[in-house]
Image 1 (cartoon, rainbow, N blue to C red):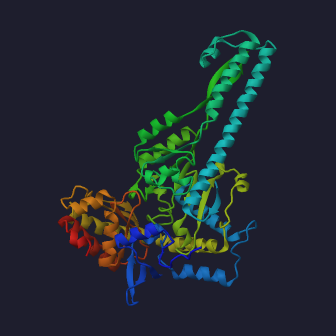
Image 2 (image 1 turned 60 degrees about the vertical axis):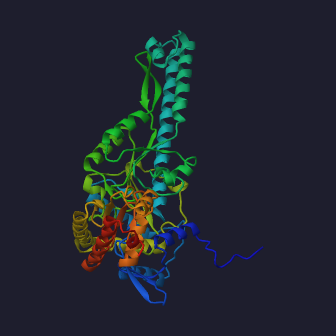
Image 3 (image 1 turned 45 degrees about the vertical axis):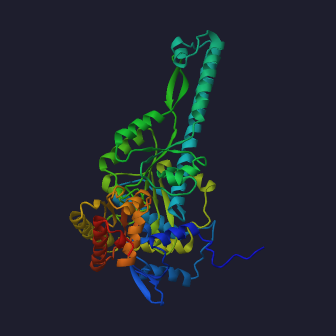
Length: 526
């Protein structure tokens, strides 16, 4: 066997080539607050202001001293990291704190039970898996109820105590026939039609532009076809409805609705009636779409979604992975639009920038205790991530929610700056969107630019990454495009982002806007 050359990159080499092309192939060696450091050619540390914020994972920045202190204290105490299938009191405290916050911010009264995981995508899959577990049990109960009704009706027909009117046969398209034989024909038609309906796969509903992960199940709920299509055979597919168009959601739900036929006995007559079949597994919603371009859901759409979900008894999974834990100026971004979830999923900043942690919460009315025995995760509820999560919640809630107020105030400061840049470069900047410290800066489509090079880069979907490389190279700013809307730069700094750092971002944005306005090809690569 020949030895592998040390010059061959064995860790995602194609991605490495893309980073190099965009000018983003630097290795960061140290981090503190909003600053990352890499070493230049002579070994000198070069500071970079981090507006990417770990894709929203750093509400308190890199290596926050009190979060680091909580982690060190857990290590110094010899806290067992992996002691599966035992009690986990720190995780229990995290779940209780989350429930207290939900009661306050979402106005809920019933408890929410927690299932912990490691990543956001894993938490989404746990929510969907639980929702399907619940749906399948409800479907099975309905089928058993109908079978019981059929047995009761059959006994009455055989005893001569009930008749089958022609209307019952007509409902199923069956030729009327007297007596027990006619009833058996009716039951056979009911069974055939019900079997087809019961065999339907579950229906998941998500919004166009959504991003809920890239695992086998969660990628089916992510709208970007480039992420999803190659794996469409691996799991049930989602139905995607247009963003912020409740009338389209209503039409989709009506189209997908399913019913079983029930055979019931009333006053000596056998009647056939339709029963709603629980085909809908879950509606998944991000209060503000992250990878879809920082697009906020409207309160009107949220209310309509809630109404439609209740009508078909479909749970709502509120994905607060990027938006939650204070990033938008409140713990829950969904509370601002009146959206209440049957499930909530949190991750990213729950790990404090140090550990990998996530949690799925499901309200008591839908909770299935049996799920605890059919779902598990080796790395969930570990001693270190739970200690960090508890400290993050402490920091968010202390001083009467100072962190939330700070996120809102810093977000207003950045938004005002972004709008000023947009006002000075209207031919380059299409929109400024978002809330708090989750903001999007959309560049206008350059695919028809008089510059052939810039137009080609835009058509290839790489211009946003080259803009990011220019900001890093020329202004030591780290900012990245959203995954499914690459013309939109996302800014997600910590609550401690300073005026000087915001001014540095403004200088960089004005510089790149001037290059795009002037179609300065050389400047883009300088």
